[in-house]
Length: 123
Image: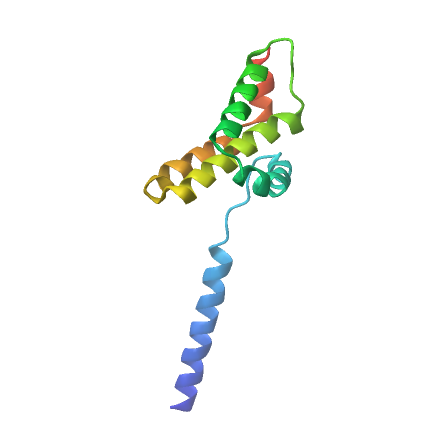
């Protein structure tokens, strides 16, 4: 009986470890993921203190610069805007629980923006 209990215990431990190993997030194919994550950590606290006017100013400034053919944002400038917008979307999801799914989706869309796509749009 003691032997069966030991086998069961080992089985449960093994299955728990196996599940945690296989349940890991798949690695991102995004070559800029580290830049985005660093900017997210850098701006998270700042953007969470934004009010609607601060966000509107940021949002319109980004689109103005993005549409201006005489300006090409650097990779860090581009991702600073997109990540800040993503963080603000996340903040809205925290403030308005009934809109959390939409806010998370919007956050992910902004986080997934690509600098190479931006550069291609400038051609």
